[in-house]
Image: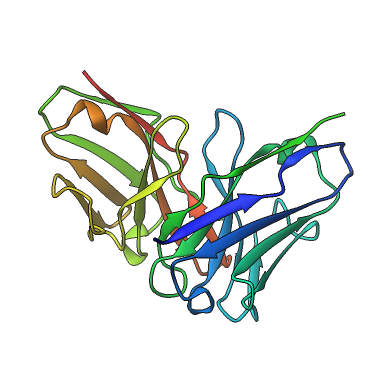
Length: 120
Length: 108
């Protein structure tokens, strides 16, 4: 079964850091680009970041550029999001998602999300 | 930055056809994907690359894309189709994925 499981969420103070993880199973992980997408409480979906299958290319939303870093360890079938200088507006449920077939394609598999709360 | 515009809400009578639009500048030149999200659940892909259905998605779901508007059509709407729907594209000019604001579908 194809599955993505996020972890690492929690409560952090403004200015703090957090590292999210996403464990993948059921597919050849390094064949696919991966994404982080977030959803603030009661709000819509917001794309955060993308990393290519080999990890050589990364992209970020302007709202997180310079503060967040996406990475992956293909030997561990794992995706990561290092979040620094966190702000209250980063409070959201963070999903990892897999590209469907090719680069910049639809997101066919989503995890259940991990909640990040930035609050003093 | 590239923007996608969706109506906040759409209502449809049980068994009738719902159409949810997604507007964007020359969106017809891009691949549009659609997601369904029910309360407390992760999004589910229902249409990819304008008009293709993933395995397991009913034929009642279809999509089209032309000019400045992409449309998700849900035929013979059921109570179980009540959800938020999001469109999404890749914008190569800004190297970013873009989601529409989402549309809440109500089945009356």
